[in-house]
Amino acid sequence: MFNRTFGYILVAALAAGLGLLAAFHFLGRDDAPAAPPLQAVTLLPQPRDLPAFNLRQSDGTPLVPGELAGHWTLVFLGFTFCPDVCPTTLAELAQAQKQWEALPESTRPRVLFVSVDPDRDTPGKAGEYAHAFHPDTLAATADVPALEKFATSIGFVFMKVPGKGFDQNPQDYSVDHSANIAVLDPQGRLAGLIRPPFKPAAIADDLARLTSADRAP
Image (tube, rainbow, N blue to C red; front, side, top):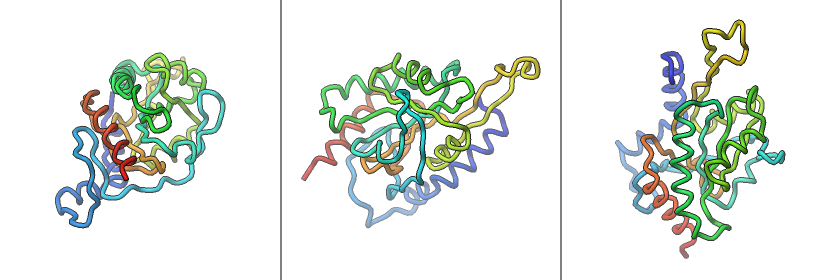
């Protein structure tokens, strides 16, 4: 799915957005706060505030930073015409979501699917697509500048890739995008990352542990 140019962009974006993560693992941090043992989630040394963003949810309401407060949230970029990575990832996340259904709704982890193909995916279409995997999945999109700002803030990138018939058919294109999952904490800050291959049981357990840790006195 990725071309070479996109690969270079992705490496640069991840280096800029998550460079502290490698330093933390190699150098160690004696003063880092204790965290529950995790299998799939790699936490940042310190959560990072996100700059202001404004996406549009599938029900037409705005998705702004305050809307993500109160829950751990997994953010995945994609698009409804995606042939492989997107449906596979959302299906895997749905397995994790099923394991969270016993948790209180007020603190239950959430999944946010952000379509980076606004030319073909309206907010409503993105919502229909996401809800087909799990009804609790949030969905949103925006215009390209707003999406680029949001993606960059979580260390992700995306890029339209024209197909062979694009000159005759403007709908003949794909969208290369980061395949990782961003982890936002209940304050809406970037707290970590999940890299493929994804293991639903491990993801479910990690987010349940993080949620429980937040509730502990």
